[in-house]
Structure formats: structure tokens, C-alpha cells
Length: 263
Image 1: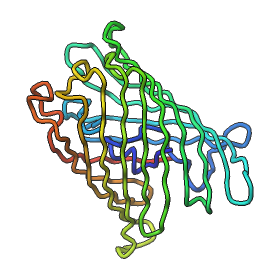
Image 2: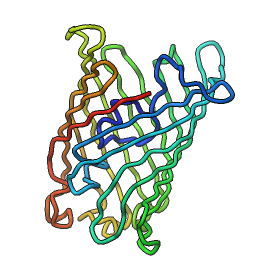
Image 3: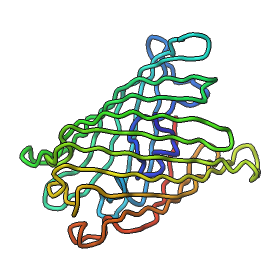
Image 4: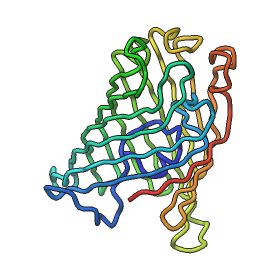
């Protein structure tokens, strides 16, 4: 599942669920935990492409995670479900918001340093005419390992019929995050650098609105956690030029600033 810092990067590679806070005080039924994250960003960039015409976005995620089922001495499995939403701006379509429904399983091992997340996302675009076929399903596997000095993760995601009836789609990405522990103002302020690179393949790429069947996106940024609030600045870009992005600047390099809070 995604952390507050990931949702703070509005262009996060995985729109999944907020991580339950360490205090775990928001108890749910059957011994599980509810969680929520709220974010305000200067742009909602999905895999490097702006979904809001480079305008502001308000986002929220809600989730429930079951208690962990122990698998041996050093592995535990849990399940989760929830939702994620953001405003979007697709001119001329009447689309007002994206609301995603999520479910999956999460495995932790090796003292929680090794994680796997097998999940499903249903993307829904409110207000979009049905004949545009904006809604779609996606399945994904995310793996990560915490080395202490850095956390690395990688994922592959597959859709049998991607956005706008564009056919088979695969998204592969890798990410590294480095805590800056040598910066020590006080225990309530922490710093983390991160970088991500991804590749999106789309079978019927013309329907998706890109000039070729795959493109690259990347980001680098800094997250500062201040008394529980994540403040993130990220540089985001793709290898699609203005003409290839439907003559818009939605694929061009930009800085995105986000404030988020998890509960």
C-alpha cells in the first residue's frame, strides 16, 4: 500500500491505499485498522501526464486492512480494500473526478523489510460518457525491500483494456527512496529523497492519445515530514513532446508541490 509520501507525490506510480499510522488507534471491525490520507497538490500527474491540465488537485484515500495472518516465524499476510479519488480535467468530456476502488493482499517478511503487494484497481471517471470507455481495470504486483540506508521498490501493472478502449497495457516502474537521517532538526521533522522511472506500453496508443506505443516518465523529489504533515516537491517529466501530447503541455517537465496528511 502507498504511504502518505507516495500520495503526496500526486504523480505517484501506485494509486493504492494509505498506510495505517503507526499508532494504530483507528480500529476497525474484526481487529483490522482503518486509514485515510488527504492531499492538496499543484497538479495531478498520472504516470507523468497531467490529469488536471496542470491545475490544482484535491485528493483523498480511505482504506481498511485486516489483521496480519502469521506465515511461519517471520512472515505475515494481510488483505486490504478501499478507495482513492481526485478531481480531473478532460476538456469536452464532462468528466469531473476519478474515483478508484482497490483491493489486494500484502505480504511482509524478514522483519517487515521485504514486502509484496498483489492488488486490483478499478478506475472510474465520474461524468464521462459511456461511449468514451474511460473506466478500466488494472492488476499489479509491487515488491520492495528496505535496506535501511535506502528503500527500493519495483512493480509491474497490467490492464486488459486500458483507458479509452486502448487495449492491452503494461506499466513497469522502479523507485528508490533515501532517508536523509544526517539532517536532524528534531524528532518531528524528517527528510527523504526519492526518484522513480517508469515505462507505459499501450496497444492501441492512438486511442490513449500518445504518439507511439510506449513512453517513459520519471520524477525526482524531496519529502519533508513536519509534525505528521508531508510536504513534497517533485520534478516530473516524460519523453513525449508537446505535439505528441495532443498539442498540450500536459506531458512537459514541471514541478509539483503537495501537502498531505495521513490518519
